[in-house]
Length: 379
Image 1 (cartoon, one colour):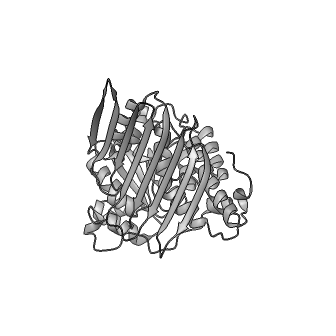
Image 2 (cartoon, helix red, strand yellow):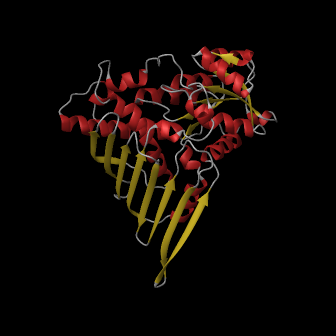
Image 3 (cartoon, one colour):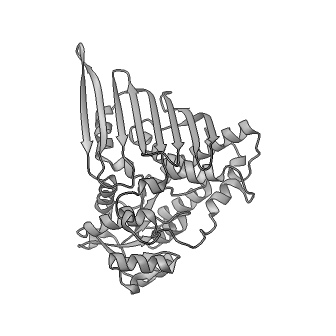
């Protein structure tokens, strides 16, 4: 239903009741009852539905194990898609019913999957926003305003990523007595199968877990700053002991600027750290992000520029949760110009970059690829 024809909180259905739902979205949605009313929850695991309903006061009649049943049974305006694994089927169901959809990243795992979502978006009255929450961060927006039309020379990104357990030492899940993740196996991911073909590949975890699960945030922030990674020139994947891994990506932006992304998964590292350093001709910007699982931890943007014979430094610190700003932006956009979202273009760029990285690594290691990855990705 178009939001311009009604008033009151947005009737919202939640899909996927795992870590991000309990640690982030449910606390925020409960606090922002002025904007949202949860009218249904969906998960394949009945235990997750029961647990979530009890904790967040969602009545049993609003529990569903598939999206279509919820959409058919409730008077609903919007969907928040945040399950692990594939998202596009739920997104398409929502779009086909004319709903507004906020989808946690990634929207898609293959170019064909993006095309299916685009077709649903263009053929109906629904709208779509991808959950690149860092691009809604007030500190990032301060950096955008500062950069303006300035020219970048280089951008360096570093992410140190400890285990999820270490990132969840505070907040809602830190006080749970039962595990949040579903005990049921994840369903097959047709997008990954389209990308790799039907054969198993040693790069599937790199592709779906690291690149489209984590590094995708760096892709989105670079776009938000006006310097998207356009071409991947070099990629390296270093497998460490156990789960530890390093991914290094070197490429160029729209004006030939050098872009480097260094991503480290260190299972036992004490703290999460993410820094974007944007270097211009006469200025630079450093953005320091906190762990995404801690609400209201500060994001800090430090902006430096020439000032006569000296230099001027401005520091902007935001304690506002980027997730909350994203929800506010989603709410304010409902009912306005549906179908005009650039979401599919961003998702296509994400998939393209992830496929470029895998192709370069596979070529260096002499491993043949199938599916979409067997074709040359547009570079």
